[in-house]
Length: 330
Image 1 (cartoon, rainbow, N blue to C red):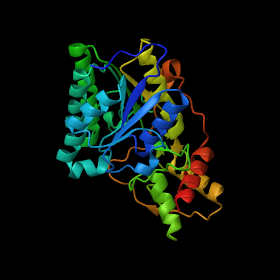
Image 2 (image 1 turned 30 degrees about the vertical axis):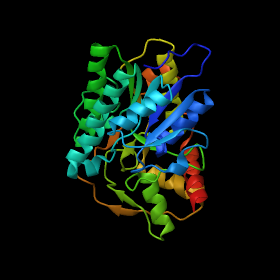
Image 3 (image 1 turned 60 degrees about the vertical axis):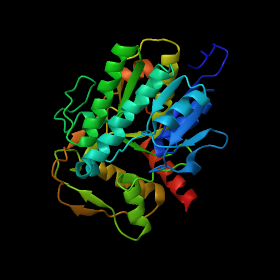
Image 4 (image 1 turned 120 degrees about the horizontal axis):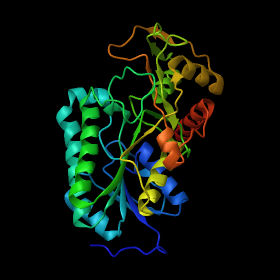
């Protein structure tokens, strides 16, 4: 069991998935707060180049118990920010067993190792997918949980495991639920997902194609779907604030929504891309996709109260920073 850190020693946080788009931003936010990050990532979707120079990097799967044990012990880890996982909701329908293995078995492996090494603090990167297709205008933490994909189900099970481990072993934890994460806080880190809206739009434009809007007849101001888009740097800061709150022994909720309270339409995204890039964006208009709700927006009031959560970046900031990170990688 690691020696307990004194108040004069920097706390060391293991960031699982720390070589990924979100995790790499969390690592940088930890550094900015004077905390020591350690990264564990199998690079299945992350990139070693995203890990800042000088940050210890363990290339291993969260399923590798020996590697997780070694990471916690060798670096005297005091807390874990668990970002690693298989995050593609649509693909999870075709690969449910893989999704559960990565997100549920992976969580179990991590929690077992944490208990063995006396690490009793965890910030979990959960998802708004735990709510499913909601029928309310504003999602709160009390909104019913009805996940509609193996991915959403696996994230909800992860929250349950944390809850149960709190009862069994005194684990202190919180889960952060968020919707659409965009932008970049460092040109060295970008969203490389093949399924997210911003990369899809930029890829289409780079290839001389027009991006697609699925559905223009929704009961929204401009007829296109409205979603909650948040800047990745704001998200990363919330993870760090949650970690420092756990370290300080301050009260913390089991889960927080990180939402804008307003939302942005797909059409507004396209208009912002055109304005920022100076390119002509005339989206291809396609029918609705089955199951897409008109509007999903979350309140961030609880997180604002406890985690200093707020929207520090405009939509133009989100688009511009994502574009700059993409250009830097070209």
